Image (tube, rainbow, N blue to C red):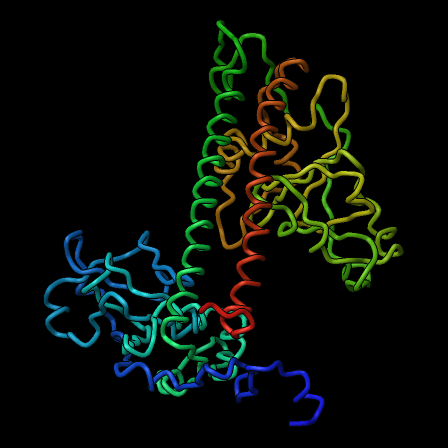
Length: 435
């Protein structure tokens, strides 16, 4: 260690083989603090599955998230399997670590899954007098832990973590009380995130319900009529997209005209840049040169254009803002340019693409396949209900309030996630001490 490095290390800290840590912290191998480390069942167990909901749970890699077990797709395993393979039984407090695919992601078995069984994961059972299981799982799921774990992965097409390598993996180990307090803080942050997720989910559901109600029944109507798309208010029309648009087109990839993506330049918006709440994330877009944008001028965007995904994840939509420009797109995104702005609200049409009208239309034209898609002719032929402009604006004003709320909740979640990442980094490396 050089003199400069010595000066950079604060009093009370020391340099170790896994980084600078507090003097009181140890560096230990996982098998020093976990006397039992073993594989879950690795064979085909489907013949032991049962529909009996009272039977033991069978935890697989697909059920494991960072610090959480997702029970949504949990299968049950019968008594014969439990009796035949007792070593794969797991208990509350055990740490489960995914071996393949999302290798290294870990969670702790809660009381809910006590006496369950597991498949193709590594079971670590800790000495509770030395180690807090939640602390260890949070460390493995942290940026520092994941970065170091990647160095011991094997496999070419899929990451794989060998049990013997996890046993020898070195981790920072604070005094037990400090481990427990670090875990308590991080568990509390996750609890807050879960509450935010529940609020977001409920608001999304309410928004969807309101979209269907407002776009089929409108506001304050007493008289209704049958139409080719169902029962509608008597005063409403049914129109096709081609009747109310000046342009419906799509983009292409820069390579087709001899260009590559650049580090900076014109925004090139793809499906993945449009979120579920109808926002365009410009900070994550690829870039193309002004010359390439000119070559692709057919798909150069204008303010107020509506973007709709027409390949892969169909139906994601957003409205182009002036701050998004200049911008272009590829063949998976359609650009819709409206005419007659005095009789058509762009936000109303944007919400139509989030409705069952568009979802049912996609199903009716058979877009299922390895790469679902809808062509421009089919898009132009899409029909939907159209109220008068005043009612359109009233409907969109209500729905925009839901969008505004969801944006606030999602931004709050994003900010809190950044806070959590920073907190994990400082707590799990001892930069901040909790005594």
